[in-house]
Image 1 (spheres, one colour):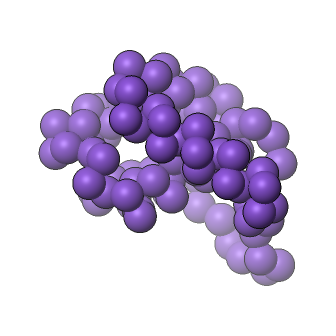
Image 2 (cartoon, rainbow, N blue to C red):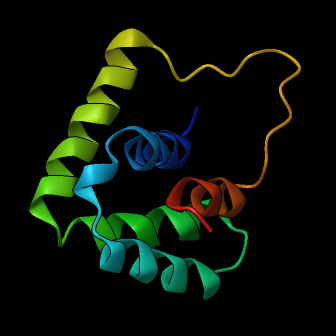
Length: 96
């Protein structure tokens, strides 16, 4: 799994399971950011990283989530699972 995949998987987990880190304004800003991006894994990952790097609490949680993934190796997807593009997964986690 690439760094960009790990980065987005960890961020999606934060959106789903640590929702209190994100204000309504944060979620609205993320939706606007995603609307401007193509379905390109690297560009989405870099844009999301640029966004959370300016929010210290979210950055710390993101780094912890990535480290946990690496330690637990919990990033493996189940066989036969159909994956949505990352932009759709992010929008679903934000709450369209």
